[in-house]
Every structure is written in structure tokens, then in C-alpha cells.
Length: 164
Image (cartoon, rainbow, N blue to C red):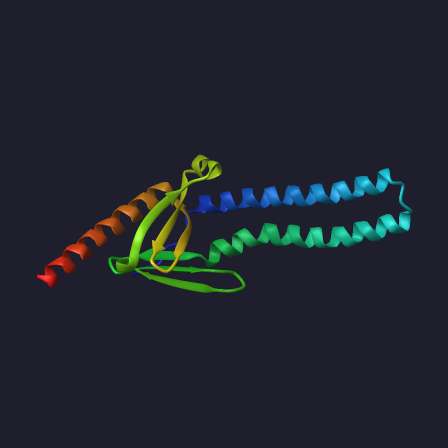
């Protein structure tokens, strides 16, 4: 089985999420600066607090902007008639193998941004857990669900034939 990479549109979505986090971080930093300015705090206190807040904010901004690219490069997925494989993770790598015969439910999910970018997530439910395949194009997600559903139906028919 050949593992596939995510569509480049996923990178746009992750950067939009990163921009939202960045705006929130910058808003928190600006709010702290405004409070210090309004309270007329001594300049040494102001500098100390802004450095104490600013350095972590800058580091978090850097991580927020770099992480989507690393996450995109490390993500791979694929499936056949017997199993689904997903590899993901930047610092902590994870490889998940889900036997098709254990699938109970398949769900396609979309949020507002995902709908705009024509992306979908696929949630695979088994008896033991749920697993999300991050973000696929809606076309890929629908094709995957249809093919896995067909594989499941075939497998169920095979099991019925074995019982007879």
C-alpha cells in the first residue's frame, strides 16, 4: 500500500488556525501593555512584565508559524481492503493501523473554514476507540468512506458464507 500525502489546501487551513492563535497571543500581549500603561506602572516593572510576557509570546508565535509545515511534511495516510494506516506527529511520531474489519462507523466532518476550502475530516470508530484522519479533500473523504463501506460489505458477506 502506498501512503499518500495531504492536499496542499490543508496547509492553508492550518495556517489560518495558526493566524487565529497568533492574533490571540498578540492580543494578550497588547492587553498586558495597555494595563501597565493605564496603571502608570514604573518603567522597570513595565519592562520586566513585558519581557516576561513577550519572550514566551515570540517563541509561541514562532512555533505556531513553523508547526503547520512540519506537521504537513510528517503526515501520511493510506488504506486498502484490509487496513487503514496513518503516520503523523512532529516531536512524537505515531503510526496507527486500523483493521477494516473492526470499523463500526465512518463519519465525515466539516467546520466552516473546512467547507470554504472544500476539506473534510474522517472519523473512524471501532469498538475500542475513535480515530481522526486529519483533513482530506471532501472528494477524497467521500471516496474513502465509499470504498471502505464497500470493503466492509464484502467482508460481511464473506463471513456469512464461511458460517454456512
